[in-house]
Length: 374
Image: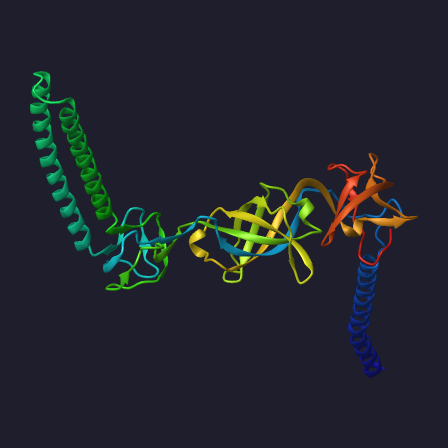
């Protein structure tokens, strides 16, 4: 009897821990199921159904939006920016002081013609002037003597008139000799060929030691391009040219620098169209404001002309709903409830739309949850 009771007591004591462990396991499973059900309900809770549900409200964004006209253009030299430098005198090129690509300043000596022939002409003109002065001095002396004799009645009037004419002719010869000397001295100034503008030497068509002839036409020595005298010539389609005005802002890139934006301003619009392959375009000239040293003539430019800019209210496109051909949104009323309001929309930009009428910047608009219709 004693043995039986002891065994029973052991069985009872051993069974208690197992009952408690089971209850804990069941309790944990129930709790996990409840939490999972709650999470599932929150994840799949419809947004915007009923006035008590929480919804996402957004406010219109105020931003400057612009309208651009795109075109393709070319970097060109401005009119008068390219100067051809020539020789005024014939002769041998004694020195050539620049090469292609050289930077020159206005007035700098870029070449010289052999001056020996000009110096010979100057010497000859000086000699002729000296002879003319001697002749003038003799004519003045003769005239003075003749006048005294004529006043005394010792010679005829004809002889006096002849002496006066010789004096006047001698004076004219002196004036001609002086003019010849000035001309020869001017030619001496043409021996040195100076840069008419500051810029870069683009081409050279002669060499040191060559003989140039300036008898019938001025030979071209070289071509100088004025620094910074570049502009963009954009070809704008006839469908867009009506929106382009002088003074409008321009942003463009080049094939050489696709990631660098250059800025400028519309300066002129061609009155006559340019027809290429049946397409009507108008040339629009754009002045370049900065970074001119990066650009070269004949580079290709991708041009954006800003034709208009204004402030606008923008909303995400998902806020806009359609019904009966009208657009509307859900706004938050003063009481916090949701209200339907008709709006007028404008242009679309990516995932946003412009609001023209019906909303203010302080209105709160319901943002539609993806895949859920309010």
